[in-house]
Image 1 (cartoon, chains in turn brown, cyan):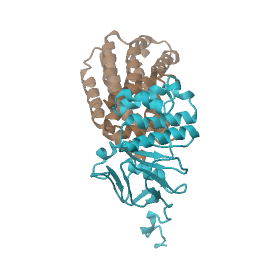
Image 2: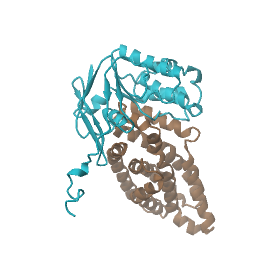
Image 3: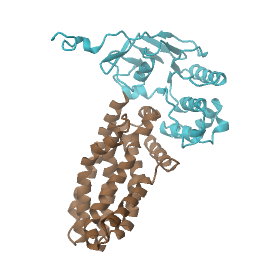
Image 4: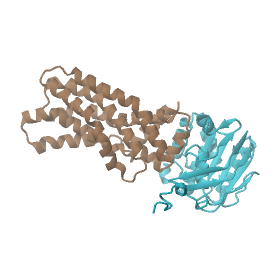
Length: 220
Length: 220
């Protein structure tokens, strides 16, 4: 199937030289590690901001690699051929967003618990942390794909992309941080997670059409 | 199979970018587009590939209309543009194999396609190390794995040496002999099969603004 071929191609490209796979994960580690150093070692302060810091860093790490999502294929002409391929462009967009999530979102989820230790996250909040990242990071890649498609023809579009996409990340980030915060003081954290899931599902439904429409306009 | 093209006009950003006469290319023929720089040859080929919308006119492949049944129409189109859509991180063979997978054609077509453009020797080399001519040959070899009946070729022989031009002409001849259609924009004679010569004149200076009384000064 054409879409799976695109997904595999993007994964392979990401892990080759210059592909930047796992770079988002490395950035995430660096950014979160800066916080205890910058804020100081006060354990209860760190514990209180842990959820927010992890989510803001995850969001920034995701943004870092988004600008190349479609731009690389646009610049070398691959996007023309992806449009002519048998798969509908909407599905191709989804395949590329999925590949982006596997190369940026998944590494974040894997290293997050280790980083949470450096932030003195409450022991009860680890499940909420993992769950909220698992549910929320796909939305980062999906919503980001819309921004990446809109700015595909813009030189140095990374900055505009960030400005466009950051406000749209707000619900995912707020709900994720809230779930972790509530879990760390032994409150029920399922409702923020459920709402976060709703945001991700909405992004999943809207992104293919929005991003494909933006790409079609940009290719003219 | 016959490709029939009405007189086509394309506007880009309110300016007339292309005003082409109608023509037809039958199975087994290779049409050649001629015209000075800026006449709109590339625009016409991109419009026929469904990559940008036509302001007036339509194209038909037998009974399929480009405007009416865009998806089915473009599923017969193979396009080779100025950009080679080559990924430097993948080897020559991997590049071609990834396109074969994307176009859902059997992988057994990859080796013959490499051989047809004399790329077998460098098949394992990363495409980033290839010269401009080798990259162009790799881009053209994609036509062979796409398995489509209409080839739209935009200056296909740029940066090719004489031997490679002959290889390319032979590939087009085989394609046409098998009942395919080719349409190439080119400035030089490259020994393509017989077919119509289409002269495209640069579009007149008439712009879309002309009908706008505000812009033509009626309100001053």
